[in-house]
Image (cartoon, rainbow, N blue to C red; front, side, top):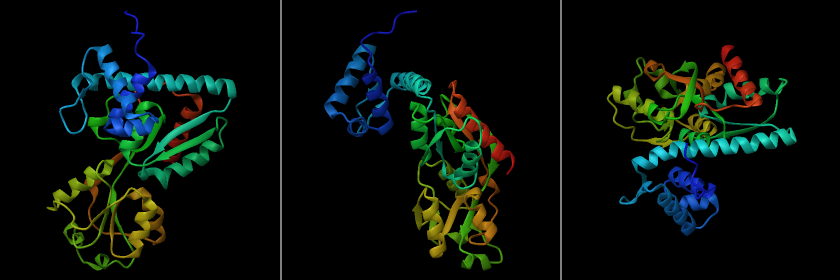
Length: 305
C-alpha cells in the first residue's frame, strides 16, 4: 500500500470540508478563523497534490466535482477519526467523558428530556452536549465528528451516504391550533380549508418539509399563501395560541398540549405523513461507552412510550 503523501496536512482537509459545508470560501474562512486567501491557497495546494479539481468554479456557487464528492467522504471520515482519537486520549487522561449529540425538533420535547434523565441515573452517566437545529446543520456536525449521533426523523435517502439509521418508531404530523380555532367547528375539515389561515411550516431543508409539501400536493395545494417557516417549537406553540395559525408539526412535539387541551388537532387525515424516528450515526463509527449508554437510554424511553 502506498504511503500517504506527506504534503497533505490537516489544514488542507479542514479547509476543503468547511468550504463544501458552508458553500463557499468566505463563510469557510469565517468558520475556521482564517483569511479568505489562506483558504483559497490551501484548496489550490490540495488540488495540486491530488492532481484533480475538487470544485467546479465555473458556477456562481462552488460545487463539488465528481472527484470532490468522492474525496469528501474520506476527508470527513479522516477528520472524524482524528477528532475521536484526540478526544479518546483526552478522556483517558482526564476521565471526563462528554456525550455529544444532536436533537431534531421532533424529539426535543418528549423523548430527549426523558432519555437524558434516565442516562443521568446510570453508571456511565457523563456530561452531555446537546445541539439542536435543522437536519442539514446537525448532519454536517455528525459527518465531521463534532457530534456522534442525531436523534429524530430519518434523513432523506440522498444524504444518507456514510451514515446509518436505527428505526425506533414512526409518527405522523398533526395540524395543531388553539382550542377555539374556527376550523374546529367545521363539520368536515379539509386541507383546502387551511389555505386562508397563517401556516407554521418547517423551513426548506428540514426533514419534514418534503413530507408537508407531499401532503399538500396530494390535496391539490401547490403552496400555502401565508407560510411562516420555523424550527422553533416554543415560537410555534406561542404563535398558534396567539391567533388563527395552523401549525404543521410532529405529534410528539405537541402531545402534552393536546392531552391537556392547551392545543387541539384538526380532524384531518394525516396518515400519509407518517415518518420514521430514530438514531442516525456515522457508518462504522466506534462509539465510546457513555455514548453507547445514552443510545440505550433513548431506546428504553422509546420502548415505554
